[in-house]
Image 1: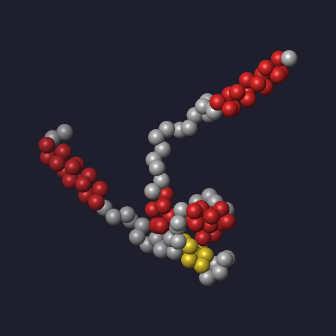
Image 2: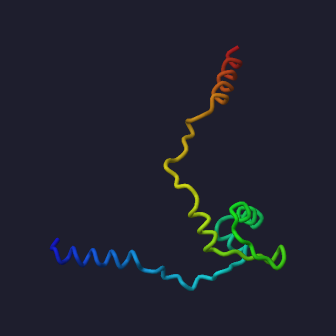
Image 3: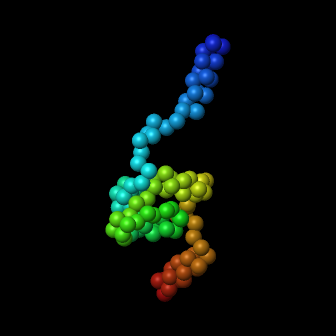
Length: 108
C-alpha cells in the first residue's frame, strides 16, 4: 500500500472513531413493559433488575412505568467483562465427596 493510501486510511479510521451514533432519534423514556420484552425479561423480573441496579423507574402508577434505555445501557456497561466461560467440569469439594459417597453406596 502506498504512503498516500495509508494516510487516507488513517484519516478515515479516525473520522469513523469520532462519528456520533446514527440513532439520535431514540426515545429518552420507554414503557417498562416494552423494554422488558425487548430485553427478554418478564415485566416483574425487569422491574426487579432495574431496582437492583439502581436504574430509575418513573411511574404514574404501578402499571404505567417508564425507564430510560440509555440508563439501562450504562448500568450494563458497568458490569465486569467476562474473561472466560465458566467450566462445567469444575465442582466443589462437597459435590465431589457426595458423588463419591453415592458411588460407594451403589457398589454395595
